Image (cartoon, rainbow, N blue to C red; front, side, top):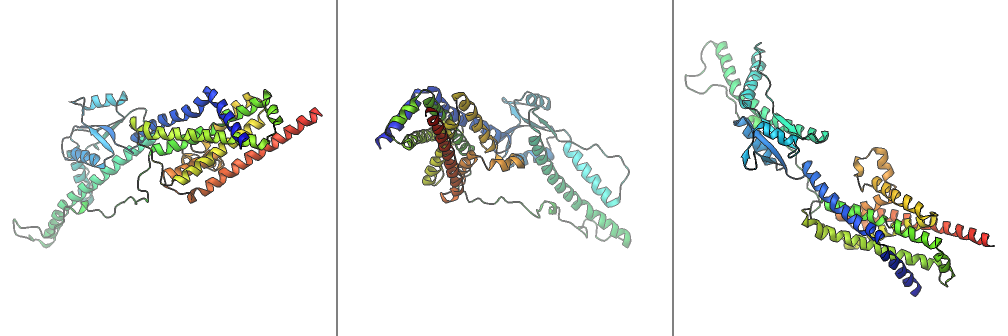
Length: 444
């Protein structure tokens, strides 16, 4: 027990003296959590997940413009601004503000829109009942939307489609109302022409009538299903999970470097002369760096709990199963340390380890959904991501943080992490025995 604790203390002491390594292990993941979480909050705002400020200029000042304004405000997805810095703005000023990037969207309702839309509805219904009149129709009125030039095409399309759906509903309601007013008159005139006499007394109600409100009654609606989750997940939960896993796997750099330096400066040979099994030395290293991984995770959790709320981001919630969380973090740490031991055993120089280690971790992070969600990747990349150990760790943490999973629900990911840890140690042990045999043969 004493050799094991001594080895563990020695590893921690060496790591404490390595200030650059501590910055990589603790500060880098914390900074990434803060930056990405704050950026993602703005992305969610820009994509409609939170309220977005939109300039609204109503030059019509009649029913159509007021209805559009009411519908947009009741949606809860946007906040319409009709003034800027306390002063009303016109279409030219709003367009200039959008082009400068101060606001991302501006909606302009041109003057005379209500009359133009009403007249076109009358003309279309008249043509449908009596046939085309051959009279030239007025130009189609437009609702004008200005976008920031940096707004991406997908977001532009979603905004325009939402506005088109809103206008379609309003147009159908207007056509239904005009039809309810026009069709009874036309029908009664037709009956009078066929019978040759008036069907009702002057001033009395027409024989045939329609309810003017029939066009506003819905036939079908869409309802969002209720999730079993008590609280909606936040971007902070995903980012803390992702960058905590990423930071833990960066343990390969100091751990692999220690193994290589011990081999190069002769420390490893001196350790082999001690009456201590090599397995004890290896286990001491493993325990030390698993403890470091836990320190990384707890530090990032503190940043999510205390630091991010001060910057306007949601506070971190850790799920409902602390036992599952402890087990998952421990297994992620073991997988990361196993990879570091394998890298330090296989690499011949520190330069090789420092080049291959971080690059391989970044590639595995990109494939595993740390930087980009897996579901937006091409199909082939989604298949490859199934083999990324960072994806297993991320999926397990997300299951606990976001989906309120239990230890049972993360058993597949724990199995993959355990297998990865075992395989890396077997490879490291085989490489060590092979190198040990070659050194013994050379000495002989």
